[in-house]
Structures are given as C-alpha cells and as structure tokens.
Length: 162
Image (tube, rainbow, N blue to C red):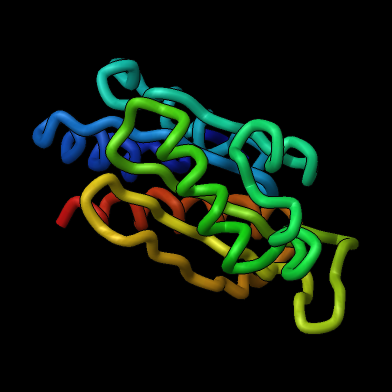
C-alpha cells in the first residue's frame, strides 16, 4: 500500500486542524504506525501532528499509554475498553487536543471467538468532549484491513472537527 493513497484525506485533515490551531497524536496497534506515517508523509505536518505511539504489544500499551493491565485481562487487546484507554492515554501524554487509537485483528491469524479477522476498535479522545469508540468489521486480507483502518481513523479525526 502506498501512503499516497491517504494524501487527499490527510491534506483535508491538515487544513481543518490548522484552521482551528489543533494538534493530534496517534496510538496504534494493528496498523503499526501507518496512521502516523500517512500524516507525516505530507509536507508541513509538523504544524499539526505531534506524535505517534506504536503499541503493538500489551506491555507497550501499559508502559507507553497507561492502559490498565486489568482491562487487557478482562476484555483483551481488541476491545472497546482498550481502544478508549489507548486514545485517552495518548491524549494525556501528548500536548494535543485530539488522539485517535486503533487496535484490531488484521490477520491472517489471531481470530478468536467473537473477534474474527477484520475486527478493529477505533477510539477518538478529545480535550473538549467524551471519548468515542467504534467497532469496525473490515473485509479483505491483512493489507486491506490495515488500509481501511487508516482511512477510518483519518475520517474520525476529520469528523471530530465538525
């Protein structure tokens, strides 16, 4: 997948963020930094992109984002509770007004009962509103799931500005 595929969405997001003087952070598991990479692929992203947390392991979620280990035990990494905690942790640990988090099963393995391949939880934390979360069920192979997750995260960030 080429980062150019995300450029139109990122440019529109950049314009909206600059107009409001807002900054963002990402907290990523299943995308492994692709959201941050898409954002920083455009010139001038330092105006609005602050940092990205790649927290692929549960230990990284706990250490870098402050996700409670009990949440991980009770709900699993791919859950609404963990996605919310990841987004809120990123918001608390970075000088930003928006943080987006994703955790999911991109495949081909990793599916468990009730969480098939393509299951992704996306959460958006804001400094001025309650955290929101969405469960996505995305079709396709690993690359397709990860690409669709990046698009969904960029859309969620843009919608938070409306």
